[in-house]
Image (cartoon, rainbow, N blue to C red; front, side, top):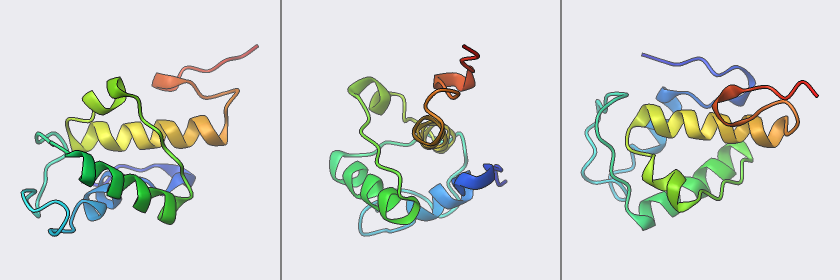
Length: 102
């Protein structure tokens, strides 16, 4: 059930592994499905973003709207991948994968 991400290394399996710390995310099942409801509290989100920065070198500062959209493992993974693309390729990557050919 892995989602390929190319060079970023961020896929559903790697994000699921980040969410596997039961001290931080005690209510999440081990077999968290990609589209299962995901509710992150503020402490969990801060910890997750810290680990993403440590592991992938990706500094993410989500807006309130971004946070409201992080409702599944799939959406969280897509958000992190999009942020990676936005920071690595700021002129060619846009939210939703649109390209700026100008």
